[in-house]
Length: 235
Image (tube, rainbow, N blue to C red; front, side):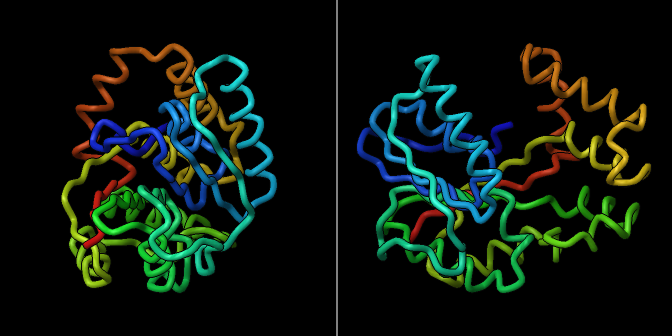
C-alpha cells in the first residue's frame, strides 16, 4: 500500500532517501525499484524491521529491486545523520504518534538537503474524527494516535520551520472504510465477519490490482481518503 506518489518526484541514481518510520518497508521497497538510489529505512520496532528486510530480500530475489538499502533502528527525535544529508525524506503516518512533533519536524528537515523534497503523510482530518468518535479505544491505545491534524495548520507549522509546500493528494479511501468497521465492532475483533470479509477483499485487490477497484478508490479519495499526503521543498 504505497502512499507517496513517486510520479511527483524525480528520483535519479545516487539520490539518498530516508524513510523514517519505515514499518515493514513499503516505501523503501518502492524507492529501490529506481536504479541506483540509496535508501535508508529507520524504525523503532524491531519486528517491523525484520519484516522489512524479508520484503526487500524478496523483491531483490525477483529482480525488481535496483537500488541500495539499509535498515536501522532509530528515533525520529535523534536521527543518526548529518545536516543536509538526504535528497528526499519520507515521513508517512508517523507524526500523529509523536508527542513532541515539533522536534520531530525539525529533525526530518535538518537532515534534508536544500532545494530537495520532503513528503509527509498523516491521517486526514475528517475520516480520523469519525474513527475517534466511533471508538474510545482507537485514540487511547498505547502507541496510537495522539492528535488530529488540520491541513492548513500542519502546512503552516512545517513552513515555519523552513520548507515550502507545493502539492498534496489524498489516498487510501477504501482503508477508511476498513477502520470505520474496526472501530464499530472493536479494534481487536479482526475475525468479525464484516471486518474479515472486507479485509480479505483489500488483500485480493492488492494481489490482483483490479483497475475497477482503483477507479472507485480514486473517485472516493478526494472525499474519504484516509491519508493526507503533503509535498514540500526545503528553502
